[in-house]
Length: 344
Image 1 (tube, rainbow, N blue to C red):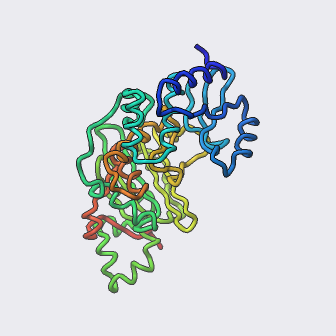
Image 2: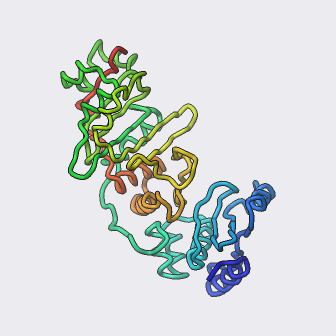
Image 3: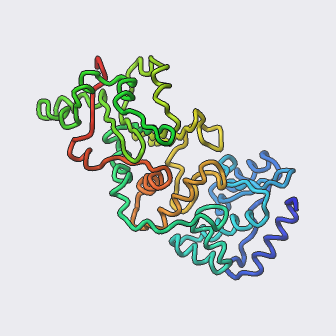
């Protein structure tokens, strides 16, 4: 059945009437054009109505928006639309995520399972984590937010069964060949003159290695001439890459995922800012290309309510969903491979 403004309103009225938890919860504003949506947003700015709006296309697609531009879901399934409206309403009342899940359980057990899964259905729920997330990738989230140890965390993965050589990758980026050949470690760079030299030159250095099936390269600015040998770079066989970039002075933190030469994203905004992520609210389009990360984030939120930092939750979700790792002990003990840029 094609969704119209009338069918949506009637379906929501029936749903709300059956459940006391939805008493007095009205249908969010339904607009029929982008111009109308912007008018609603302007009128509601700074009021209690500045939450979820709906944009209904002629083909019956319901778009959920937070503000006139940020799309959070798009569906032609009426039941999905009703669930997403109810989820936003219950979550908007506050409380822990378990309390939100419990309330949705009372409305419909399938809705509670769906909320816990983080997806658009109640499948895909995974076992609880059961371990300390700060022993995984999340250990670096706090310092990275302050640009320590590096502003850019880059990860590269080849096809299954193949490995990207971290030394070759570092050399193509511009690492000093003599230091790479010598097996220089981070502790070696820091040992010169009591670490004062490295303190001055840290922006000219990089760290590299392998963990969790990924080859990593951490750095600040890359030198001119990197990737000059494009054939050699292509020969590395990179199939996936993940880039996390921090510019703390401007509060810009971005996530960029490229697979088979194509950015994985549901919009045309380019790299995605981590600052968009709020606990309990999926940062990416529900059911979209990055929905796997929405699901991993919900699991992280439910498994680790003790984590106060959204950056730690986000890093843990990246570890769980994509397998990203960084060797904490190697960094702590200075054993990670390192080099300065050649000619720096």
